[in-house]
Amino acid sequence: MAKSRCLLSRALMFSLLCAPEAGAAGGGSDDFALQRAEMVSRQIAERGVRDERVLAAMRKVPRHEFVPESEQRLAYHDTPLPIGESQTISQPYIVALMTELVRPAGNHRVLEVGTGSGYQAAVLAELVEQVYSIEIESTLAQRADGVLKKLGYDNVTVRAGDGYAGWAEYAPFDSIVITAAPDHIPEPLVEQLKPGGRMVVPVGPIAATQQLRVLEKDATGKVTSTVVAAVRFVPLRRRDD
Ligand code: SAH
Image (cartoon, rainbow, N blue to C red):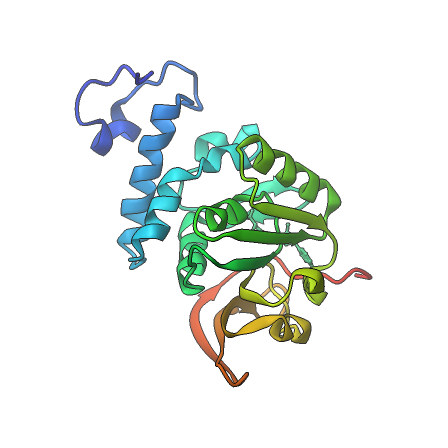
């Protein structure tokens, strides 16, 4: 049962009125589930993400498990958060938007570049058959792998390395999600996209706003690219940076 002492209208007023018993972070799983429901309706659905499967995944994945303990009380706020090693977990809306843009289907094999906390990988894992995720910072790769295993996401495989070259062993992919910003679209990743596949990638110069782009590869292999939004991601680094 709810650990909060609040009796009425928790769904609407929990953030103002409730006094969680588990300390400043709240922390009851019911509290977190309510915060997720709020997050989805106010930050995500209201801004135009419509795919019901994506909304359900965002309601389900325990984002607070993917952030450092000191950030857990902010886990469902409308903001990116630090995850260590100078990296960040993206704002919930951006995770939902990128997930919707690749049109995940139950039989898909997806590559993610930039595992970070593992949260985006978990959201994808709720929606597709298999997720392969590469993280250049081995500390983060290990930590994300541990959280994903603990939560039972056995359809995610994490590897430490430079994702610029993709993961040829498991290519081609139905979709590719790049969650760090390159200054150009990595050609090896375009090659590892299936005909009919989609890639979502923030492209742009370091320390500037980037363009969130969707690339579509048609059945003949022709690639088209569309700009969807202005975003701000940490840079995609190369191994020798
Ligand atoms: N998707 C993550 C957030 C990613 S932040 C999440 O859900 O938490 C971007 C991540 O990309 C950082 O962790 C950064 O270390 C990683 N990164 C940067 N360059 C990379 C590269 N070339 N290959 C793989 N990962 C990279």
